[in-house]
Length: 243
Image (cartoon, rainbow, N blue to C red; front, side, top):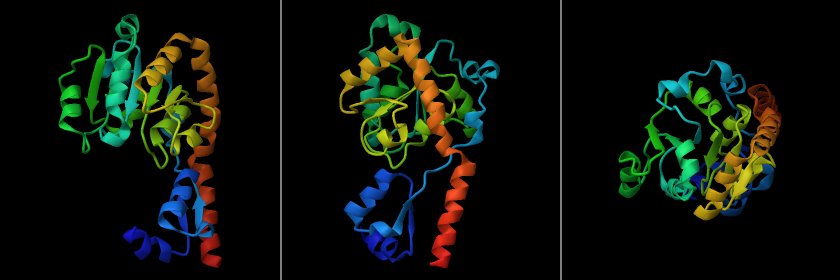
């Protein structure tokens, strides 16, 4: 709030990376609504052009089975423990056939969460740690689905990236994630491991649902192309300068 008082409230205008973030800035920080414009971040073209038939990245990381993917920092806000609980609650025949792959550095994760990932106590769980940025589009494209049950996001870039790659998405029904999914993602209560586990099972067992979400996701992801975002941002700066 001190930062908002000293910096944000003195700005002629601000960009919010989602309408959810814009509303939070107005409600929590008291920034006037006329000073905040919502412009989404852009998604790299590499996600739109990721080709499944030329994808050898999963094999390079030893991912031999189909997998559900989580990408992001390992920290409490990302809700990784609930994701692990949900995967462990899946029927054994699904866990035998599908891995849960997690990619991302440790943030301020608890020691219990770190131990849980490092020791790979659950068969089928693969923690890859840091991923080179150039490998993430192909890793994403190779997934059966992205599972991103974060408790709070200003935008949720992995969700937009997965949709651009034509990968079905399961994500939370709160903060900005419902907005970014916009009917193209399967939404869950992030506080419920049972609800999340059911969504994972439903997605895996329904090829029709996978195809519908992939198609809707690609359509939604057109809003996140850099060419479109750049035009909006240029218009924002021109308006501020003229004002």
